[in-house]
Image 1 (cartoon, rainbow, N blue to C red):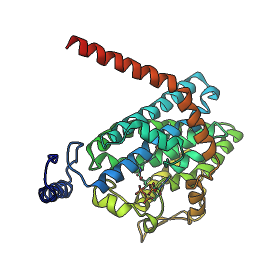
Image 2 (image 1 turned 90 degrees about the vertical axis):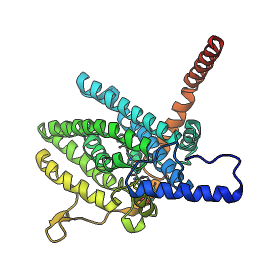
Image 3 (image 1 turned 30 degrees about the vertical axis):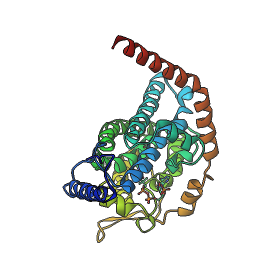
Length: 327
Ligand code: BYC
């Protein structure tokens, strides 16, 4: 529902009330909101915030893995890793496109990212010193992403939910390839086994932090859940993830680095150690092991890509001119 431009203040208020009622009704019926629909400003802003952060995460998330493309241990591994990193670029593009339907431009989002004004997932501020990190990222980071993102396929905003369907299919493949890298290492020499275990030790806690702060410190959750953007709380998804990891760790033969991890029959959930939230807040504040490097590299890539943007722009201009001449 769109508002005619020449409405008086009183009739605009009436229009907004009717539009709000229609929006509330669509949310109550668990229907989809589409770009053409009226939506409250706060809903639009929340979606721009979450979707752009998500897009930035995909783009920055290419860096820790691209670090290993030239050093992958075989041609097959190199081809798989390249395909995975390309998938992530694609995810970023679907997500930037979804955010653009809410009225923000790609340039503005990119500017926010390179100027350090935008968030992206904390997990990508950790380094990847060994090949096993490609396994741990696939298994733990993509695994956490799947847990978090499968419910987002039902997000109330149509373009976001639809983008998530394809992304989740690809994330599933990513998670399996990571699991398979670790499995092969765990079936290898004692040094390879140790390298896999060390990597799991380094990525486990940051992966749990991907789900965001604990529920009682998550300012956005309640409203996002009321709008059917988020379907489960941060802690619920974290629990679900740990429940998924435990049997997989057994198959791999790796130990999850939490001495207090234990099934609690009464709670029907895992007990676990307290997460180090100081570390999480340090990373969010830009003081993680690789924050500066990630942004430096992103800025460099943006500058190096200026000629591609100019060429695309010029091509589009010429196409439009030609179309005009024919019409
Ligand atoms: N890192 O109120 P809360 C991938 C922020 S990419 C950084 O709970 P919300 C992949 C949060 O933004 C996967 N910041 O927020 C790619 C908020 O700050 P602002 C990325 C975090 O939005 C390449 C504040 O903390 N996935 O899979 O309700 C290779 C308070 O939090 C983090 C997504 O983006 C964090 N971990 O819930 C491999 C999923 N956690 O904005 C793999 C989509 C929280 O108020 N996003 N913050 O300044 C979401 O589901 C939600 O936005 C979150 C946070 C669960 C992340």
